Image (tube, rainbow over all chains, first blue to last red; front, side):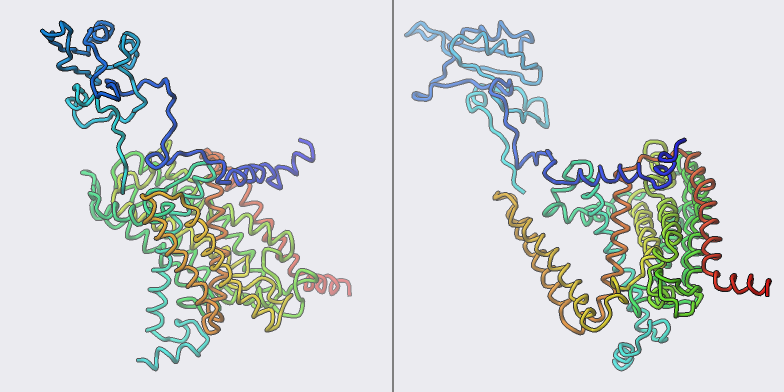
Length: 153
Length: 436
């Protein structure tokens, strides 16, 4: 062992070096923690979250034409489209639409299959529920769209 | 009774010496309550500082900047189920945390927070502290043994082995500081005029440092510094803190000797651990860092400097208040944070009020020495946290190696050399006498 090495060991220089490193890390500006309910993360536009059934913003009518393409595209068969034919116009009219999020893997195939941009996977990620039934979304809930929880103390 | 209360204030002695039982009681309550409160604050500071060392935020939810977190934790611990293992030795399991807390707190009665601010002054003060704090190991062994479980037993085995090995080096380092009290200072390392006193009393040790015009860290440099360093390492090992936290090594032994404890009993162990940290830190402060003495009491003497230094406590507290208020104003505007902001502002104003109280002449004179003592102890507490954030845990054989093969010979050598250096005048006289 050379003399400088012995001196290093005896004067505990390595320990002091380590101490100085940790001391410098204390600067609060280095912290990247997000205070979640108060600060919310920015979600990418193409993020696939909770589904929504879009309505025509002017008339409030649904954009869905009950073509059943989304249900057919779904690998999990979790979409059920119920419709009846309007005798006057001879067109299919959507009566009910259920979407079982508990089985959904958010692959987005339904969204791609939709010919009228009615079905859309939104950026809502707060999907946790206390029971499974809450995850089966009906038409009314889907048309309301994401309802992010507002946190208060 | 009122007469008894007021007569003590002019006696200029510790209540124990003055024989004033009422004030003894008050001092005991203040010291124990103060240390308990300090433990809670320390808990918050440790979590916060450790978080910052690791680039985290630490507790932020309970109260502004998590300030109420220790209170929330305490409430949780009080209401938790108190589990006692089926095969446990009930009586010993019950008494172990009580024993640990008892020993942890009784050491504090000889700690001199100021010239007159100790519960009592014993002529064997330092010996008493060492003795009582060593008895704390018994509580740890009791806890480990009575739990009837593997991890606690292993933890307490490690703990006892560690305590026994480090107590030796620690004791020798302390002896070399005590030896210094009986030597006159030498040359630039202190004034050579005052004869040594040779004492074990905590208050007298500090007075000796004042009389010799030197903190013992700097006396016979580097001997005092080496003894201090040995003590600083040994005291971390004695209190089972990182990097010597083998008795409660989380990754190896779950929680060591208090694995089976929960709720209030567990919190008693924590309380005792932190009180022990305060106790050994105050030993180090008293023996080497000049206890309650303000910086440079002899280099910058006189009433002007006394006055200048007596403003420091108030100014420090005001600075803390300013930081608190600034942080409160810096909080983001958010309805959920409004209560926090008001609370933090209130706290800042309260601290500012405390700081202003410290400027009152009567208070200023009495509180100055307590402030300096607490500042020095606080420095050690910060060191504890800093060590914990920096150093990885020692392996058990490495721990033993450091204790027996490094610290013990070093402490012995320092003690011998201190003795030789201190006795130089006598030795030279003796050698001259041989040839005369």
